[in-house]
Image (cartoon, rainbow, N blue to C red):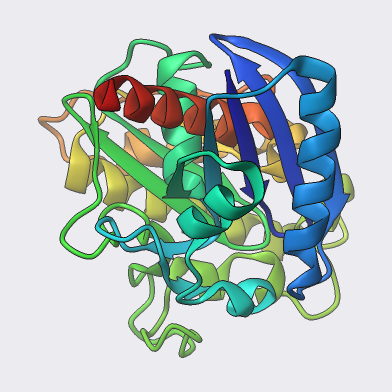
Length: 285
């Protein structure tokens, strides 16, 4: 049984999982301060009082995780207080349990390919759309991490327009700088799909997202593309244009991947953390 803590952009989502079953879950609002750590401990303890004691902890963060130490090398603004923070030691101090720490998009990919919408797939990419563009990649059953933990997770920061704006990451014309919530001035991504008031912007966002997925397909040759994030509640209005764009622009000798949308994307990260924590625990024994 695993305690899973997902430090998300607006909420910290917590769950206790055994196998493929979510025994209990809860969520708390993010404040962007170290108080979030205390709130996560309090809520975690309340959950485990209902389920019994877990054996390991899985922690997901929206940033780059050093594969060797589990510490964050880079976090988004709300979690700057976690940069360099030892989350493994934090887990041991507060729960008396070992922890695995992973990038949130990579954890979501592992969750969907282990017990989720792409269960059993060994070559896959995941793209989350919304506040930013999160990505992760898997080849032959192994989630890509690279030497410093950056591999596969920077798909939102590949250039889709060399004449585009400078992105906060330092690159130019990133997909995320062109097509994400923070790139909008007078609307939200959700607004784009609820009315036709922003049709031109919506169409541009879909083209940028499609170009991003094409790049990921050219890089990793996946059998499945997992589209996730809150905006996918718009369903085919998002999925179909992206899939069409990919099929029209894919390298001609490649086989077009299958596209899936998780039915419960809010649990993707937790399921991945559960799998990672369980495997780590088994390896130690």
